[in-house]
Image 1 (spheres, rainbow, N blue to C red):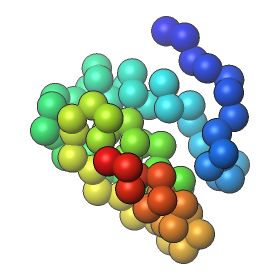
Image 2: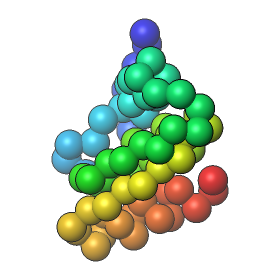
Image 3: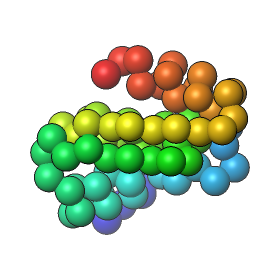
Image 4: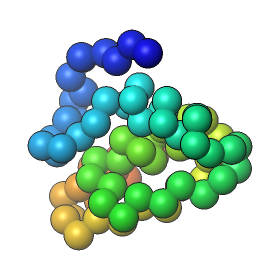
Amino acid sequence: MYVSRKKSSLRNNPTQKPLELIEHLLLISSNPNDIIFDPFMGVGTTGEAALKNNRRFIGIDIDEKYVKASLKRLSIY
């Protein structure tokens, strides 16, 4: 598996994982239309991976700035 090292403009979370890695993990561990729950969603990488790959997504975060960043990022889906 190849993981790009390109920085995203939304990369403002110090623990953000590469989108390609999260997509790979979701594809091997879930089925289309499954619900993916991320209780520490940060800037929404897991949400983007889920929505791009026909999974439903529920995410929460305690930090309002990350919630706003996630909503902006996921609004295209």
